[in-house]
Image: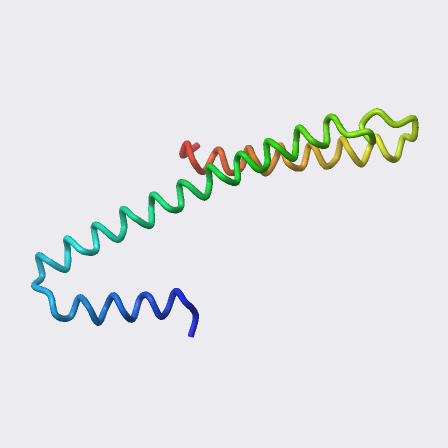
Length: 94
């Protein structure tokens, strides 16, 4: 059983002892906590992508006289930027 399944089972068990109003309140609180945790993780991922983009844009490979090295650095920087943009769209709802 995964940790997600275990948490869901524990929550269902805890809710079985609550009134409908208490259960609804608990679900609202859990949803808020999960939402905030997901938002924090997205922000962390955005920062990580930005750092990778900057790293690959300024690495020695980006300034190499070898075309393949420059292409690789540009590709990795672009990849980090694309992932960052996808996550950002998810954060902003675009």
